Length: 432
Image (cartoon, rainbow, N blue to C red; front, side, top):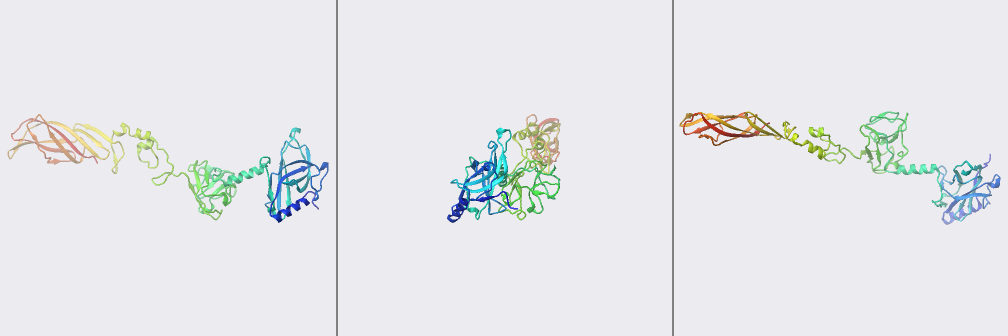
């Protein structure tokens, strides 16, 4: 059965095409017109120089090479909803100088006018066969052409796919997974249609952005070809116990071929360490006071609160030589007073008033004077001072020094009985 509806180049169109090929100057296509055939069906005739009855002429929306047939050109025009109230039976495309290049007939189609109570946007396409598509050039005024929704959607999708920032994913993997069926990842129960960043596969060539399905997963349309993936491409993760609100970027460099190139994703803001820049959580007051967490940072307010008087003064403690409690401990008992420091230093002191009676040895009269420390002191270094109130002298030596006491002698050239001896003792050492 022969075709009823078709498009052909006019004689003038063929001549202009031949001239364009010969001179190497592209033929510029600018407009498309539609007509009603004067109320009758139309059969295209190559000798035509105009439509039977033209109803509307406007700039062509787009002219492109048919992706499935390289010798075919597709011209497209959009008629808005506020134009019409006539039938469409014929269409033609025109060159820059107004020459009818190709003509086509169409099935009878009524184009309503919005003011009549019904309206629609009408898309008219003409497909023509040419010997060399490079001989044709589309020349348009972008201020007056219209675009179909599909054209806009495809263009936006194409441009978004080229961007380094992809659409966010619902979750990101924390380990290798099987790329099939609905499953829970990082605590997120995924359903069909969710986007997932897969970054931990044993075979890193399988990493990428996938669409969850009840069966086998497929790569998302914005990341399913190598040109969609560029070094530094970023992916935001919406949910997840580990990866939620994180941003991951593609660290792979060079030309990427999906299924062949190893895809490596890295956290844009890893946890900070002494050698790695990154993010750090703020420690709680309890964590600051405990002093054991080595991964969180401290705010000035919490630090100041930690070193308030209550934390500076108190019971000191240590573990393996490292202070674990307050900085300074002050104490006293009947044996005297002391100060313990977090670094292990301890100082103790006492003022004594003793009634002493001497014994004689080799012409020297003396009596023992002992001070029991208020706390146990290791490696003690005592100091004793005699002050007014007695007629004896305290010897400079300390013949008996222990971790709990120090003994010295009160001496005189004459015997003494029940003489009050006033003295001050001090000792420095360590409490651990």
